[in-house]
Image (cartoon, rainbow, N blue to C red; front, side, top):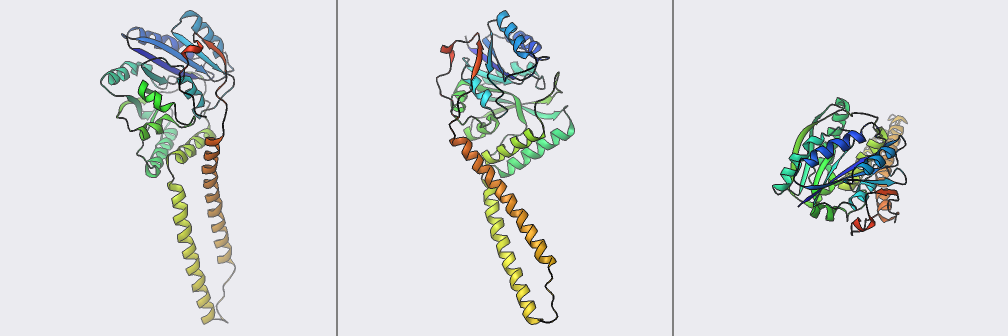
Length: 320
C-alpha cells in the first residue's frame, strides 16, 4: 500500500496544532493509504510543544521533530524535516489554516493521475488586500527578472512525489521550493483556492521578513539586476560625458556671460551617489548569497524526536 506523508511546520501554534492534527487524521483515515503526519516545531514558546507531546503519545501516526532554536523562515527547518519523510509522496501544509486541509484528497487525486508536483495557487486572500497586492507585485517583478518562468501565488500547501523530494533535498538549504520546481521542469498541477484568514494566533512574519524573502527570491532566481546595473552604469557614464562636453563648449563660446552654477553639480553628485549606493547594496545582496552558500553551517539540531527512529532518517545529506 502506498504511503502519504504530511509535513506540518509550526511555531507558536498552541491554538491551531491540536485541531490541525485531528482534521488531518480524519482526512487520512478516510483515504486508502498508509500515512504519517510529521509536525516540526521551530522552538515554540507558547505551549505548542506540550500539545505535540500529547498528540504523539495518543497516536503513533503523528511524529514530532523539535528544533533546538528558531531556524527562521529560510527553509532550513522545513528541508530538514524532509529527511525524515518515509512516504511515497509528501504534502506540506502550514498549521495556521490559511490553506484548507480539505484540499488534500484533490491533491492526491492529481498525483495518482501522474503529476509529480501539485501546488495550491491563491486566487485571492482574506488576509487583506494590501498584502495580496504586494505579493502580486512581487511575483510580477520575479516573473520579469527571473531567468526561468516562475509560478505565481503558490505557497502554504504543496505536494511532491518521492522522486522530486530526492532532487529537492540536494539543493541548498535556503532554496525555496516554489522557485526550485521551475528549475526542475516537472509538469505542475495548480489547484486554485481562496486563502483564508489565520484561524488562531499571530503570524511570525513582519515587513522585514517579507522584504528579506522578496530580496532573497530575486537574488536566487535571477542575475538580471546585475546586468541592469552594468547597462545603466554604461549609459549614465556616456550621458555624463556628453553633458560635460556640452557644458565645456558653452563655456568656451560664452566665457564671460555663461554661468555654470553649482546647482547642476550638486544635483548630479547626489543623483550619482544614490545610484552608486543602490548598486553597492544590490552587489552586497549577491555577495551575501554567495557567502551563505559557501559557509558550512551545521545541520538543524533536534532536541526531541517523537515516534521517529534514527533509522528513518533519509539517506541524502542536507546541503548547508
